[in-house]
Length: 444
Image (cartoon, rainbow, N blue to C red):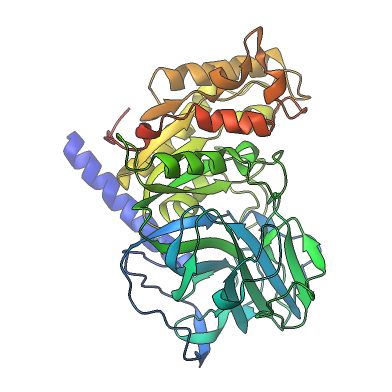
């Protein structure tokens, strides 16, 4: 078989996988830049102000979070009778917005009778700017039912979303619909209120706080500031688990700031950045259940990268948990082969792939010489250009020059695995922005 025929066969296989995935994980919008959506069941016609006329711009992701599991304690009733006000931070701004809600880990239909979006009055606050409050609709309806295991995208609504700002997305479900699909370790406080307080402008009723994001997995905007989306796929280091809560100090936040500041200069693309990190994530192994809690990178690539809006490039920072969380010495070849498979799938969609070296973890409770040897072997393959299109060397940037098995003290959060805020900033600083564009070879 020639390479050309092999690539054609590979493309056909992936097309079949996508079709099957769409049938199982329904409601995913096929984005073509026009804002078109395919939704789950909806009824009750929309109020007159919810439809958004067509505007100029490009649909891109401005925020996202991966559904990672079922929230403990919500198995029976979910969050029935509560308004859930998720606080999320935007990268780029836009003139229209739409959201994605997930009931991936639900075991019964999720009935949303009221949903809204608004710009927050202040950072880390549940109060809204009055003239930005908008009621959300789904296929023209204010009510929607999201089947268990499914997700849904809202209609676009006209509202000016500023870049680098907090946005409030609120949903209300009157009926039991557990368990709740959530993203733990948000590093951002969100809120809940008793009753339907979806369009409340004040924070008075929102007395319950949570460190999780619930149901909400994406916020897209129609933007003239960006022409595409970069997805960061990673583990707790990408999730920013040790960054300052509510400060947006993850390395992806700093990278987004750098891209915004340099966009249009030299070869720097006008891209937004969305974060698809899950704490504890591995390339190969995943949690228990169907669907699996904390699905592997290989498992979730289709959903969390290829399924995001207008993706142009992906940054992968995975592999350290494959080494730390498995008994005995892991073969570095299994890790790099898994990473190469992810790159092949991304290339089949025409995406540029930048990969990170694995940072040291000397002093961490999981450290051993054999595990560090695996890490160094994986890094050697990555640095040799045998895995990714381009490399960002987080290991070199953050390791202690006097003891390269460890993070430098001021870059260490204290657990000898995760960076401090200064360490996250350093990760973004060493990123070569121009590496996000360029050729996508079929083989490495």
